[in-house]
Length: 266
Image 1 (tube, one colour):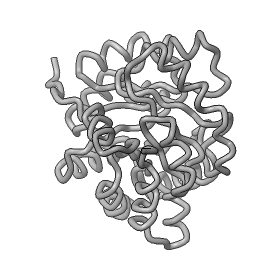
Image 2: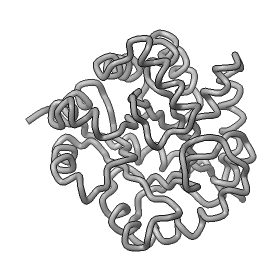
Image 3: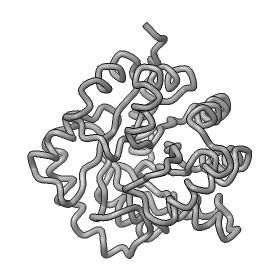
Image 4: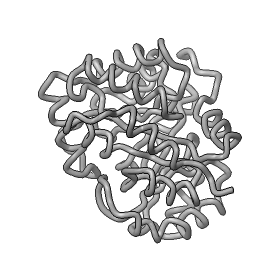
């Protein structure tokens, strides 16, 4: 039996944010983008501001990713990013931070690596959980017990198109937090008005879980972060960070601006 993690950094991060009167701030950046060393530098910058870091696993067929994250992943792969190098990056980040680190990945790389081997590597590198955008929980019958044994928290996705039955299945299967997709489609920045379907979706999910619910896909600035923080337990930002890096902007300044928007209404 592999060594397991005993702490639940994910829940602790949400709890601390709640105590501070805000939604948890979750940042996403693909591992190895734009290069291994630059990724570590940018990830450490984000960890100064976010409550939880999503480590994206670059993948050649990312069906749920918009053009911004697709291009970033392609650049990382071209520069030699692999599953092994991703785990090495996580080890480095874990050595300097106690904030939760969660891998966001499609299922095929896990299957190719081997489910048990992948989970053991998660434990060895200090990963707290996995976000699985293309794996329905009712088809994760072999992965879920492996994760449970190792205390690796699993997060599955719900969307505005999810039926009440599907929301119940997903909410009950999550062990880290519930990831609510704000709009139908792929990742990327959108207008704040696109979030109008979120409150009802979150209300349905909360009927079946006490876990935190975070909202992603479309948060890009303080205004859109505030719109999500008003109704959700967590705010996820990804494409906006990559866009900032692509144009040579200040990643830390954007992260600070968005974090200010995560405050709950008084």
